[in-house]
Length: 127
Image 1 (tube, rainbow, N blue to C red):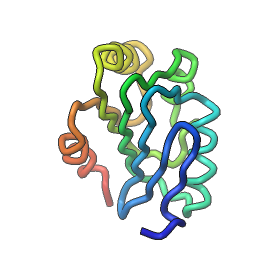
Image 2: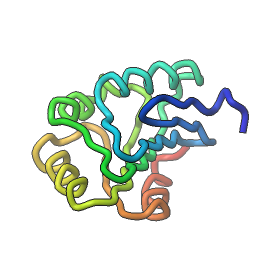
Image 3: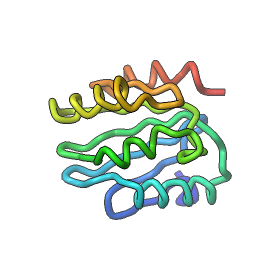
Image 4: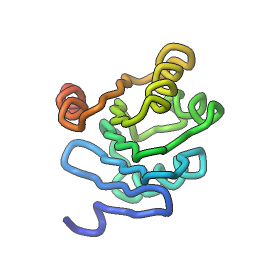
């Protein structure tokens, strides 16, 4: 894969595949507004396509409530048409439930425990 379709940062890596973005958030890191801004900038450099996003959450990956509220708004994540998160821990499951039930994301969002299930779900949003 050419490097123009991959970008690595301190806390995550982005890969643009045909039809979707894959975000690999590294273990023991936090993903917040700063990381989202980096993600959006590199998505823009990769062509600015609005695509489904597969987010692979590393072990002990965290986010805070203010970030979740920010992420939930379509305008704050303009290159995502749907979000599928693959989570690993009970803590991540609790955050996922809070995000879905309390924050209420504006775009289709679902949480999974396997990458295969997440990709099956995202397939309906792929052009």
